[in-house]
Image (cartoon, rainbow, N blue to C red):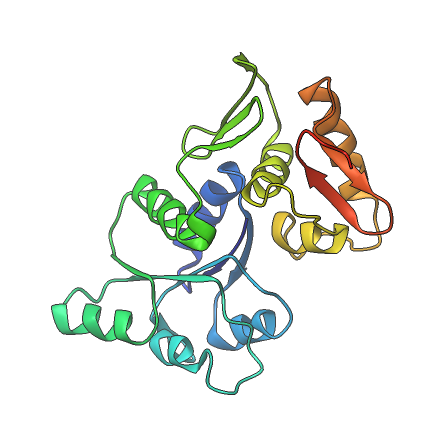
Length: 224
């Protein structure tokens, strides 16, 4: 899953970025509204965590812009993170189009839980993802196959989690780069192929991730 973090406080931004990356979220950081808009013109994020008090504008106005004829890609889900705690301000944020509203200061674990919760609203994603004998717990960052633990890197976990969010669907390498890697990924590299190969090897036999020639990859027990 790819997250856009819009936060102007450099110390808080660094802490949140590191935490999200450690939780296997590909994370891009914008510290101004202008920088956020530049990213949103080219990238469709799964979740955006948006601070309201930005140095060059109000984050709430940015939330209101989505879906009103702008060139900005609306994130699938939006979580407002702000020090504004009045009830009227919370109502305004949710009415503007946010899916959740989190008041600072907050525990990072709560932010992670909110991100997982809003993601579950997409295609009715459940708490634990299961495809055949593979089980992925996004909260615990754990993977098992046939009851045995599978040790993955954060990138491998992120790739498997995204594949299992859409079982049976063919996902192109471009889509995987868009949602599992951050903006520093080289789109001309073999990153997807290399990480996919490592993931398949760790998951073992029988192979559950299949290559669909000229189209991408699909997870499921049948290769036809």
